[in-house]
Image: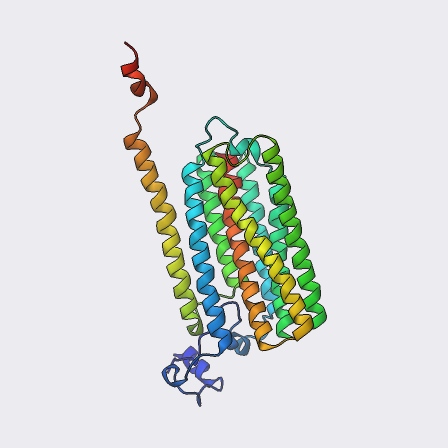
Length: 210
Length: 131
């Protein structure tokens, strides 16, 4: 009850209850809708994870995960994506403070880290395809390329989105529309990092252990 | 009268938290999250490569670490809390987690059953061929 009283004390006494307050501000509606989209995107990834988990031993005599995966490269990719999630958070702080220079700085760092991640992943894919471990080699590799490649495509889309958002900040400034889109972008980027946590755990670490 | 007027947008910090504890700035929150997530990641990579741990238990340990790191990301990066202005976000998330769990666990369970029950070992499959 004390907490409830404290909440009411924060100049909320005069506000009408939720049922009479009218529609929520657009920032909340937009971000909530995007949250729902992200959760449905995660459900799609869950289907790909399930396919991978079912097929991960179906190597058809081809190379196994333990032979293909290079944990050093995966560790660098993980560090890049985690650091970029952090700088993305710092960027949203800068956006809320309407600090243009800090926004560009942190968006730039986020972009570079994301691009390094993508570059390492493309290099890994190219190396695997060159080593006769292309998607058509076995069901395991089909599932691997679908799952990891789908995450990589999301990262690539996020990079394009970030570049577009920086152009919008430059041309339009910190308008309400631009700030809403930046909020959605940071949600997207953090969600991608959560998916990557499961990816490196299930695919690379468990694949090496088993 | 515990109604707060509006829900909070996912990713936004609580206005109430700002009013109550202004010391925990946004920067500090992200930095704590980064430290915890980095620690959990390093532990995961260590656990997958060490010989000190009981090998059959490692996948379960890795899954636990991943769940913990997901929690860190949700709390410190996405600012999901148990606050009254965050109920809708948490409910949507809980529904997502439910669907993901059913999908992954159900697929693995069904496919393991099919493999056990419908695939005779190769020696049995070849029996009629040996005249």
